[in-house]
Image (cartoon, rainbow, N blue to C red; front, side, top):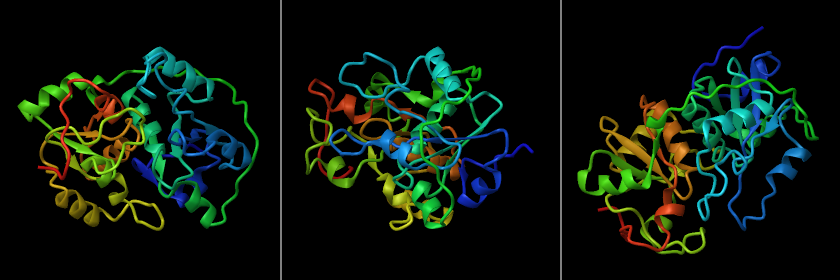
Length: 288
């Protein structure tokens, strides 16, 4: 029996009930910062949600972009790699990660950026699944390939030039998902060789502020609205999300969609691009 997706976020209960539906494909989209010591593929081989495949964020990226990590790939390349995972256009994709809810949103956003709306994130990720003592399996699957056709949505992606132009134009609110110390420039950025600080005029809304600190699940909608308002973000005006390298900005984009804003793009290069030495302006300290 085919499943029907309830929204951009699904519960462990929903996934458990629909895990064996023929049109549900589960992907582990765990990713770790360089130097984090994480080995997501090895962890996946050790244990993952039954039937899941590994969605490698770095592999699902445009090659040869120099110092810029996991930039949005070409449509044909994305389609070929997704098809190789056994995912077709008729499938519902559910992404999760081993953090709780952190990097899976990048997979969610990429599918949407290439025209696939039948995609959701598992609230609480693998930790919540394990907390509830739900089944896992090991090994590295070899799925039968499918045909996936990508339909790019350029309106969900923003470039450095567009962000630079917005500093003066203020046509959209730029919302930064990084931690407050990184945003304010009181610590070195973990992306080596980047300057400290933030893009002028941006607001700071750490992605973790939208999550319960213990379960790593999204806060109730009313509480999320309070957090967003406290960060100085107006949900009635245009928004673009940014972060360190275009990963946790997608958590913001997911949260904004849950609050009725499915149109929030991501600045793909984020601080990994903007923070490189050069003439792009930088501010430090709290948001103005």
